[in-house]
Image 1 (tube, helix red, strand yellow):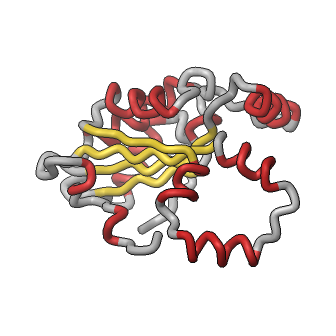
Image 2 (cartoon, rainbow, N blue to C red):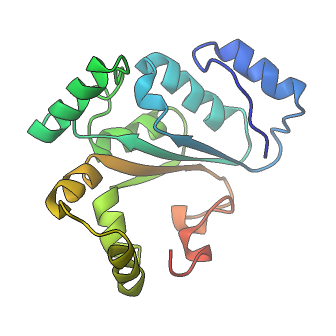
Length: 180
């Protein structure tokens, strides 16, 4: 992999920089976005997603993002980030798990799934691993931690003509990582 410093709002610059570094759109490609798209204006983030879906024969997008801005905790999260000069510019455009999935399928990905981090913690991570983590990280405010986890999600979108289901995607599959 390679990291590139570029302003994602400047789409042509981003694509040009990737091409200068030898990007091969014929190879299956996984895009990873960690709390990036919500800070971009919705149109800029969507343009990036559309490009990832259309420019590659096989691609996937794994996104970790903030959600649920309208309940009391979410509204406080949005206000706190705004006060720090870090506005979540598109969180209200894609506030729910369903809206996140629609964003990717509307942008050209054939399938998308999403889940909040609390559900992932409780269902994907097995109980022994959770118990180990909970012994290491002593939760003073377990209820607050749970609320935070309900306001972040993973979205996995696939554009893979060879896969009959998202679980069979050639690009990435959670089943490849037992115990995750």
